[in-house]
Length: 140
Image 1 (cartoon, rainbow, N blue to C red):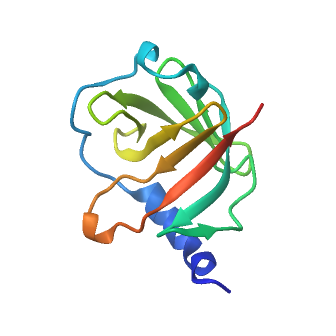
Image 2: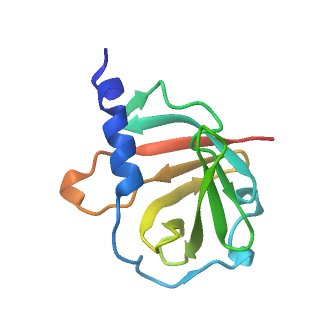
Image 3: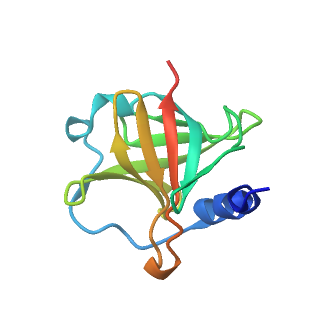
């Protein structure tokens, strides 16, 4: 069994529990600065850890995201329930920052395409950077 598969539960735990300070730069949840492609439902396709593909990720609807134009998002669980949070656009870094309802940053959307996006956990400690990236595809 590959190391990536063995460590996946750890990566998901770290990803879901990470916290860091507020992002630098001007932030907004204005939809005028965010591509309209964001506002749809996204399912997890695969992950990468230090350049190695992570397979065997939870199936949809678990870890699906639904971004809303009002600056909120839903993160779905396997049983159909969901967690809520907010998103902001960081103009300086040109990324979308996601926050849990308690205000803790829990992710960054680094790349947004017409039918794909890449979500990264926050960087709390550069020395512990595992190079995690989660690749999502749109659900049409």
